[in-house]
Amino acid sequence: MRMAQLSEASSIPVATIKLYLREGLLSPGTRTSPNQAQYGLAHLRRLKLIQALVRLGRLSLAAAGDVLDAIDSDRPLLETFGVAQRAATRVADRAAIRDAELERVDSLLEDWHVDPNGCGRYDAAAALTALKDSGLNVTDDWYRRYADAALAVAEADLDLVDAQEGRSAKAETVVVGTVLGDALFAGLRRAAQQHVSYTRYAGGGTGFLPAR
Amino acid sequence: MRMAQLSEASSIPVATIKLYLREGLLSPGTRTSPNQAQYGLAHLRRLKLIQALVRLGRLSLAAAGDVLDAIDSDRPLLETFGVAQRAATRVADRAAIRDAELERVDSLLEDWHVDPNGCGRYDAAAALTALKDSGLNVTDDWYRRYADAALAVAEADLDLVDAQEGRSAKAETVVVGTVLGDALFAGLRRAAQQHVSYTRYAGGGTGFLPAR
Image 1 (cartoon, helix red, strand yellow):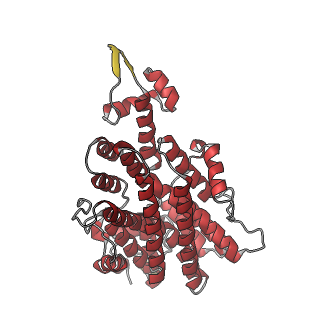
Image 2 (cartoon, chains in turn blue, purple):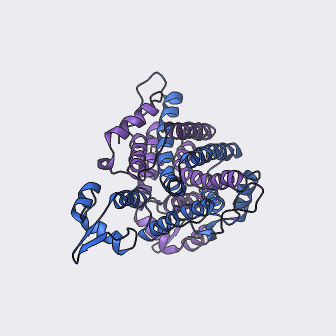
Image 3 (cartoon, chains in turn cyan, blue):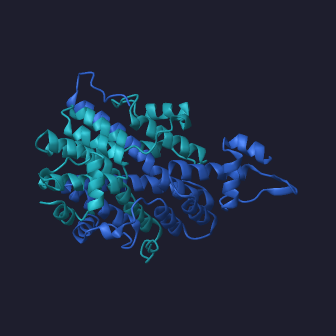
């Protein structure tokens, strides 16, 4: 199909598609004349993946490029996982992490095989530092239940990866699942908070949370 | 303490504190002369809460203001929860949500009491729409396990709120827990993914994920 049809099929403006081409996120079409090129289903699929990473995952174009390079490479899946994790990571300010909170994370996860330089350990410690700084009275029981839930989600993530056929589909699942899984979980957590609050505080009443 | 001491105690620059005062996020100190005011421990505590919301929770100053207003009000806790959820929500583009994915969320959560206009339901549907658009082959089993984990986390969140004494501490826990809980869970999920990948793909080897 031509550029105009690719735009229509993907609901993505031509200018945006041209930006992705210039930035190297999308491979060029097959040139049929000096001013025209043909694009295929692989382009359409890749466009949707880029949109998912950039719009909902809120990755920068550069970070999305790193992630797509990792999918296209033949690096081991474990490495692809690492690239997706780094690209999708919200926190990077290690200076704001206190040693005491890093130790607390280490003791929470002492039975896990975790990369000591990986983003998970530092992200969790950054969140614990901020929780502590905010003066909140948090309990070890709360952390522990978060860690148990995170482990259950990670098992589901890896089962989903294992169920895909071929390296490319597995790598895409690693990347998209890492980036969009955060958003899915955050939405479900809010819905679950509504459900649990309703059950505890408004049982029998009509007390749903106020409409947005 | 004076402004300079408040800045030192909080590690927050004077210019930033003055910005929070101007924006109404921090209440004024007690004026002791035309050019000087005294600040107390309540100011210090509030400053740390603002930093947690703005820096790690990535809220705008306006969103942080809404959240702090909700803490300071005497609105019911359920409403405070709603304000914190809306302020901490990443997605708002309802036009990008497909009806089919909203129905899928509704059927997934059919036993839950969820506000039909709340952000949780729409956020989850937005993530499902993006997952579908990206061409990923996701399974009902994966969603179900995410929902189960989200419920376990929400139970832990509400237990933490219930354990606080007094409305103000409960409201702060609702707010901070909602905003920072996402970041904590994302970090733990990455660490858990490393652990599970290592266990499945590199058992017995030295194959940690590559250092950042």
